Image (tube, rainbow, N blue to C red; front, side, top):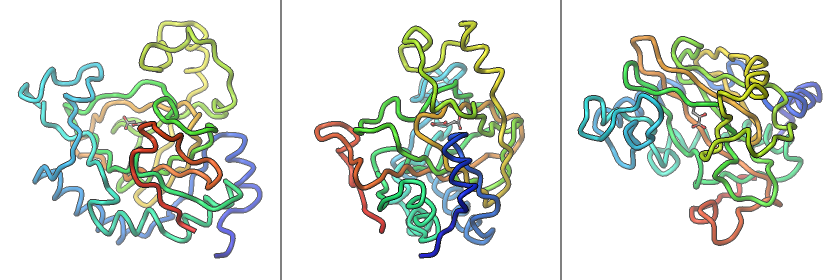
Length: 254
Ligand SMILES: O=C(O)CCC(=O)C(=O)O
């Protein structure tokens, strides 16, 4: 497979911790994935994660509370439907990731591997965090791949990043017990001030480093936002045996 990324794109990823690939996935492929996601949300096809289970601020208190069964994630996207598998193993994507890892690429089915849905009204915001927080790999060098199935912006809960924050050394007290940056700390407020929102259109893909701080707000629109998210690692950085990261399949893609 030919190189997908220029040396300038690779350098931008190394510096900023993320790389935006505009219009990487054709609209028709996005629409197929969106149709599956909508159907599975409507039919509550397991495994699902509900807002009430995530328990973020403002989430419904229980599954039986109003909005309690608002879907947050359609889990196991890879196992769920061939359209998601086709995207996750798209040779163009794998080639781009191979360039960033400089080695063969594996997708982990233990993390992300989902369609994130953010609903109006009951969809909650996510505080500043890095994806590596619950993941167990020898090196903090995974890449999350986020595909927008429709428009994403600050008003419907689109992603925000702190560019370059994958390189920061933080003090333990900057994080809370769930490994979110504590909003009340002045040092963190200085970081939040560097946050940028990254508006996406249907078919846009963002690759971001597992140490990059990111966040997302609530969905103030009247449409459900849906994004397909997978996580990848280089072949020489396999999940640590005996951990949750090693408990699901891990698939070599090239
Ligand atoms: O859509 C959101 O609220 C952010 C999701 C996210 O960053 C995550 O689950 O790691």
